[in-house]
Length: 290
Ligand code: SAM
Image (cartoon, rainbow, N blue to C red):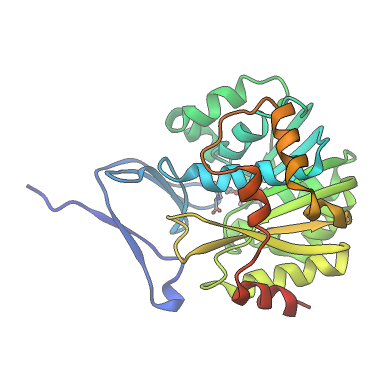
């Protein structure tokens, strides 16, 4: 019997480190207009999507990142009606956002139409509820163009991007964050995919330094996502409303009840609060970010 193929994540080649996965079946593999895309079945992590050699989403652990990138900003805000996702191709985050009945409109700006197209076939658990929801609108565009031009204002901006390489690079720039600030509603908040601090310390410190030049509060919170290897994943936090990080536990619990206590597998009011208590090495990175 032929040797099974192994697919390796090449994101950390510079650090001389690769995570490799034995492939049960390749479901989809192509070079899109913007990036290399491969979707395969893994016997433990289920469906796995990689873009340009970096793991994006797996069926097994998607809930951690998707819930923390969504419920933390929306329940901290407390009255989010207009939400913007930049990136978000597979619609995993959109599915979580639309669990909030308070959200009146969700716009997703994705650069690569083929990521959404193939997600319709391979991630129906995300795309079916989302594409069937009249509050959802999809824009195929570079996120930088959209935030620079839109006349709409958003209560919550979720930047679910690839890493700072290829089409995702601009989404880590000061120009992009300044344009996000321009289209953020008063009291709004932005969260970003900000890498794994122990392997990508510069990505976090430079991101927060850029936030602090634009917003009253630039910080991050953390969660552990097994296939975003390297321990804690950092999610960037940028807002002019300093109180949003201090929402009392009881208020978060009450807002979750009011939101209908939709099912979660990772997010709880306690986990929400704890995610801002940073381990010392990350807290020092954040403190030094200028
Ligand atoms: N959660 C994943 C992660 O942390 O690596 C990201 C998931 S999502 C698949 C990332 C999406 O960002 C991809 O679909 C990619 O096409 C999109 N993207 C990359 N650069 C973009 C840009 N400049 N504007 C809009 N979308 C972009």
